[in-house]
Figure 1 (cartoon, rainbow, N blue to C red):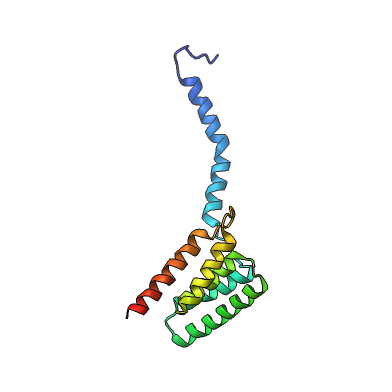
Figure 2: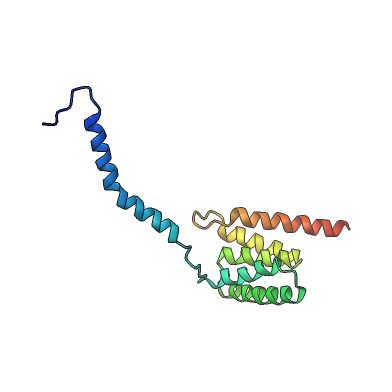
Length: 148
């Protein structure tokens, strides 16, 4: 008969070993999943994000011909979307970024102000902070050009 003494840890150790053996398949599954897992391909479904991604790629491109082509494509699409959705604050923000990237600071200021006006008080997908950054950056760059 297998008896344990009242102060002995032998009974609790075997219970812990049984629990660990019961968790082993789960641990093995999680390890295999993490080893073989790959990030899913991200598909942009919003046309304004696709247009803005073209502008972002253009900003980081060194080839001037490709850069101008991407800026024209992305900027043209953002202008169309801004006309189609005039009350969408994020599109105005993205168009303001495009204008700032292309050096059209007056237009960037107008679009950033419109994004702030439309998006003020929003709680989801806020644009207040980022539109303020575009507004201040465009104003500073415009002032720097005036001082030259």
